[in-house]
Length: 380
Image (cartoon, rainbow, N blue to C red; front, side, top):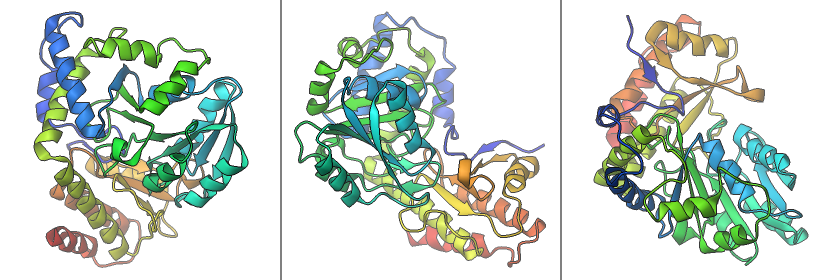
């Protein structure tokens, strides 16, 4: 019997401390006990998002916050600029389409980061563009987009905002919302926040809140104005996922105890070691030039069935890695290292990768990847 291990970029593995907190008897969400927890969560989220603004919490997947970042920010007749370099970039366009918003796509080759210059040109050419939608970390390809540079471009306009899907960015690498002038940041619970799926987050700048005031798109559950009013009372507008809130307080306390800089260094270390191990095994990287520290997308060698490799991870070792999506299906596997992961976790998954590749006919010396992984880990 094998233990089960999650190396997918969400859901991710959970700390025992969080699991134990969520197993405690449930409370009522309109009682002072819950309000105290909510107050602590508000401060912890501001710390994590690096903002003085409130971070709204919804009981939903991260896509709920993405939808709210369209329906609350835009109005009829507005246009959006959408960075499409993977499945989740494409999702921004799909949400815009659902609300009747015309969007201009900037299509980026999968595995590449967007060029900020293309955004500058698009904004100059169309004054009706009101918001730029992008990912910080495109989970489907393992790419990190240059958010700071994009924000600098958008900040030149008083009537335009940058909206960042940081679902696999927050808690992984530095995204100082206020310092960089990011207008909207959305995220989800099942990534670096070390929780099960079920909570979505959204934080808005003052400029973004001005667009909320004029927004005339339909909204009900994901109503940011209504949720902000409740949040300031340490409440949610509707029944929340109480156990997840309790776990969230614990995970935020763990993050604060580790500290943001050590948190970001840990993810950088694990990601660099994983990438170097893959290269030592003769494997290519899907995002070699702008990799995200949340997940490493590894190319499958010629003659190896990528989907079978992913299945064997689970059959042989109880390990779940993610396969490629859409045009990358069968071409890559994605190994996560965001959230509750440490050095020996990566030794384990690379060791399993070596054994499977050897079994499937890839030619290399056993231990090559693990050796390189350990060398990089010892550099930090």
